[in-house]
Length: 369
Image 1 (tube, one colour):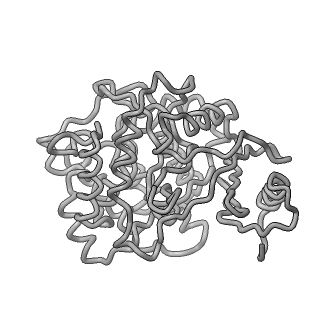
Image 2: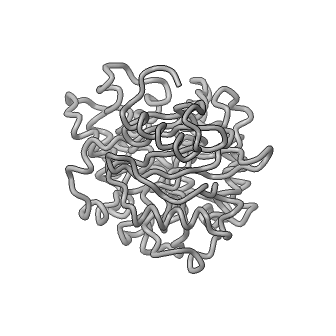
């Protein structure tokens, strides 16, 4: 293990070596962020979960990941929970090969669609409980809090992101859940975009074409869509028939090869009950913004439908995906602006595309009255 690491990473390394009963074992720090630290030792990976993680909810999520119903969908944990001296919750997992960030043409979009469809079909009544709510809407609200806390200079982009956010229905903004979370805990809680979040750097031409295809998610041509009605605050529209097991933070960084050819979903921090449309929302938002090529989107959507997925409709997916996709667009744009400002850098190409998409959402909302 070389280079400077955080105190949390150092504690996690010590705990992992102790668990492996080998004080000299080589340890690799895979991620070292305030919202999650991950280290590897041989075939075992240890994760320190974000500060403030509810141990009871995490225990339920671990039980779901270990349940036979999810055996070929979610990566099962190696062992039970533990904690670092600073109180951070720790879990152990088998190591798996992640999606290659430098091979976009080989990105497993079809596998992602199949896994999501199977996850959404898991019989909730047979799982450990009580299941917590899927945390997608809460994370979107935290991204907006982070943007506001950044106190950025007034700009067209910042105003547009906040207007686009305000125009979403309450269930998509997680308002009921956020009312029960202390504001001090929310402000400044970082989110992150793993390797899969950048959508493998599509070129500018692809984005323009993709925007034209995806105008619907940005609020145009709305005659054929019905927004979900105000719901219960956990990402479920009152008109929705779905209250399914959801991942809550789907992107390519959340897939690993468990064996030579078997893909599994990882990262259970946001797992819970909710509207399964939320799990399709990030790829939908990328497609609408031109960051995800049409063939990849169709591969993902087709695999999801073929595996019995419930959240995409038989023909037009946008009646279900429009609001969640707009929420993910705004969430990503808010984080992009806050992170770029904190680092004193310009937006990168993918971040700029999501901010531009949020601007178009806000402009349409104003035009629609």
